[in-house]
Image 1 (tube, chains in turn blue, cyan):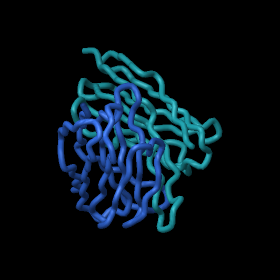
Image 2: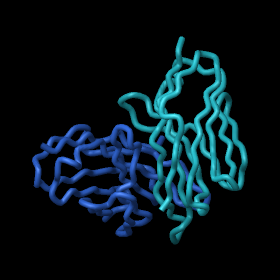
Image 3: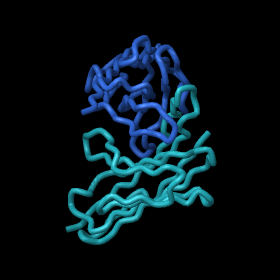
Image 4: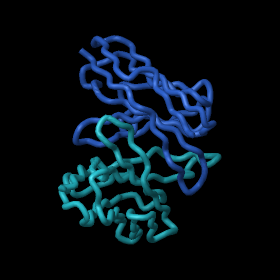
Length: 114
Length: 118
């Protein structure tokens, strides 16, 4: 059974702090993704990675960066947190291959920036 | 980039009736179209998906149809039950764009809150 875990369920940070959100998957998936979910806006893609050390910008990358040093781990970094980054952050992973494969989501991290 | 529109935003149906949720997409290169169900406080979970070489797919009470020409796909739930109450998201992506088959991330619709009335 696929397991995607995230380092924290709830996080409270102050404006200007550097924030690290960690995601780990145990199914040897090539692809990993970071989304944020806001009421009325659905899920929006921040960054994704299809291989170790590879990263691609999603639809809303501004204010974020990512790191993938190992296949199973994908980190989202907020260099200087701002109040508009208060949101639910969801990590996901999937197999690679043409035709598309199911993305498995982690439980989410609810980040509040004060 | 891809843009996915989803309608309606809220859908209330009587238990036992059918529910239909519709989505349109803008990028003709998109070839993978999943539907996710998200219950309150839980993570999204895949309920059905369809690829661009197929026009329809069914899994028990759930079916999805795809019209590539119109860039339109729909979710059909028959014989609705109370446990179907949730938020449903459609999504689209261009899979296999990158070396080794790495996929684009998903572009999601804004979601439909499905309410099953007893």
